[in-house]
Length: 259
Image 1 (cartoon, rainbow, N blue to C red):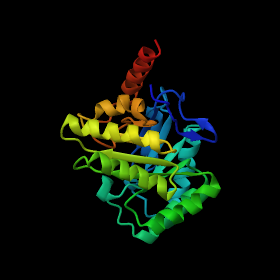
Image 2 (cartoon, rainbow, N blue to C red):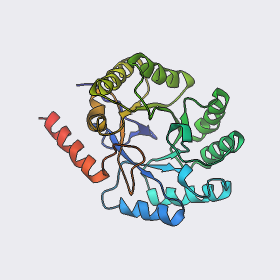
Image 3 (cartoon, rainbow, N blue to C red):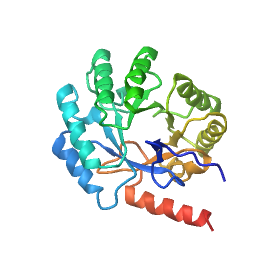
């Protein structure tokens, strides 16, 4: 079995360190909706929470975002928090924010120390990514450099290139998500993940989306993926399973593998 490399926060693995951490996204449009979403997962909490802030109606109000981040941090307790402003080009909601506002938001969030990870897209301007990293790392905030293809699955070499490029930028975690049209696409994603796990030194998050890609959300850790996303109040991407169901499946897989 592959040597599992978990994501860590403050030197401790997220989850049990033996299987992929389960992360649930928050998609609420205001504070009340976000709090309701968090309460909905409190009976069996995930290992991590992702705030998809582009769905927040006040995303253009920096003070409101910062204040809401403090509230979410309090409600999350010790659970790691990922802050994501996904672009429309990579599956996010339209925000109308200009580049300067995006940079200011991400850098201020990093300096607020309310989050554990910030997601920055590989396709973003290099200067933006470097500036966010410069703000985040002294504050102990890790940077996930991500790439999402909602239309197709690139070649295995291209998937590996994207993961390698994220590592070369200085990412703490490299992430790639693709959309398969056949099981051969899923196999390419898993093969590229396994190679990246062997050749790169940072944790990876990879997945194939949609119904064909569900296998990667369950068995991705066997190829080197350290975190998997589950649906909370609503799915953030095609193919996400409900959190409780996904955790049951992961526990069954781990139990079987440990026999």
